[in-house]
View 1 (cartoon, rainbow, N blue to C red):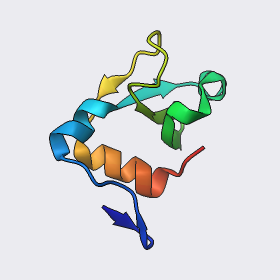
View 2 (cartoon, helix red, strand yellow):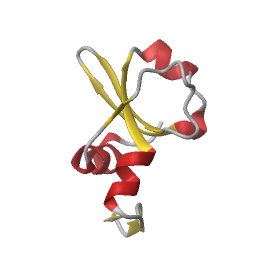
View 3 (cartoon, helix red, strand yellow):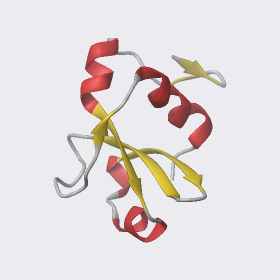
Length: 81
């Protein structure tokens, strides 16, 4: 997946879905996360959707599996924190 001339993803679909998850958090919870586990963020009226690297994310964060479409949207339009 290329975005603005930069290679963002070069992995199989199943592997991406396995490695990335999405958590619905408050801005305070998001700020407390380690920066290396955050791959993208999207603010909404109810909080923040955070795309996480599941291997690096703390286990107490209730991240759920997500779709390839959501991964791409958060990487491309959500912006990294």
